[in-house]
Length: 387
Image (cartoon, rainbow, N blue to C red; front, side):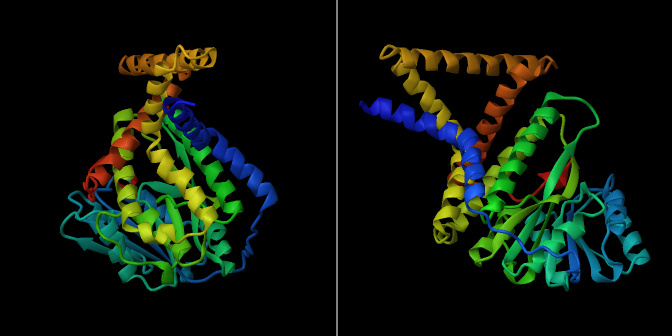
């Protein structure tokens, strides 16, 4: 077999495995290899809920009211909010709430240094052995905290991440397709958890044991880095499907693209930073990490490689002809989706392949920036805590 054929099949199979066969593999593995959790709702330790906020005046009051109404004993909660150099009315709102409620403590940083530095400060100001991280722009369902914390009854659990549920006030292809992507992602995390650990938490809601936390460099993404420390310290990192955090999904694909670039850049910088710890993981965790993170961030490279080698092999066999026709149809749909999106039209038959391709393109851009030594720490968007 020619080297070009080998290249084609390897690159094509990688793309297929990452997005289709990997979840199927996890499902089969979860039937054969289950790791149960000793969950106990009577387990109610003291917890510290930590929030980093930057220019959140439009939603921080609703967030605090949401936390004040959750189902968990009031005397076992402290809420720590660090305002990361906010220039709007965020600080005054936080001051008012901290004066009214003893369990709320707010701190301010003069300069915007980024979410990770703000979270380092929040942990330093906290006093509980169980740290709960949540973003300023999402709302927890009433029983989210009870569901999340009950898993820590199991001494093998080091980190528990909640399930993010997106909503949108208006219809858009970006919100609908993005919501579908997160449902797919949550399913994959659930399957990974059933077989041991998932590969990283989402900042919307996750909790860790205090002994796992380590102060992070400003350019490292806090949720991924902090949650993976559970695995690095021989604990399990799992998802709790019933601990739901609701977040408003952007309807603007440009905002979504910028977010993906930033997240990919910071995750890949964290991968470089923690490379020794990642290589020391078990074989199963390294396998999961390879297909959940590394190959997903480089998927665009393999998509392009598959297309180029497919074109070169077009006359070799009818199989290559059929596969190239399929790729031609797919990328034609991507182009049509791109054109229709700029006209304000987003039929799903075209928008889904467009969203999938553009998502991989921007994730690859963020990863490439990390490989080139570029780092991004601060946030500056409307939905800042999601970026």
